[in-house]
Image 1 (cartoon, rainbow, N blue to C red):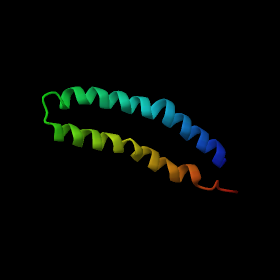
Image 2 (cartoon, helix red, strand yellow; image 1 turned 180 degrees about the vertical axis):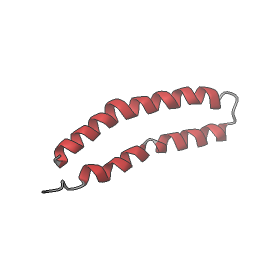
Image 3 (cartoon, rainbow, N blue to C red; image 1 turned 120 degrees about the vertical axis):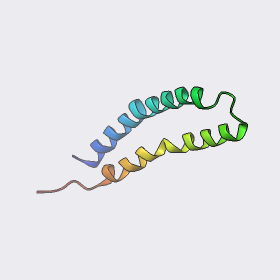
Image 4 (cartoon, rainbow, N blue to C red; image 1 turned 180 degrees about the horizontal axis):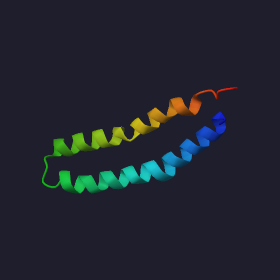
Length: 71
């Protein structure tokens, strides 16, 4: 598979699958974690949730940019 095809597949999966699912998961989780919580707990929750979405994207980058194997 060429690099362009891999990049297209990864971009589509990230934008149309991963980000909406992650956003809905975090939105549902915050209703269970944050009601009545102090402000610093909310700050920590949003800081972690706001940076954790990038982990799967970072894991997909080596796959996207790996050169195709030639026979």
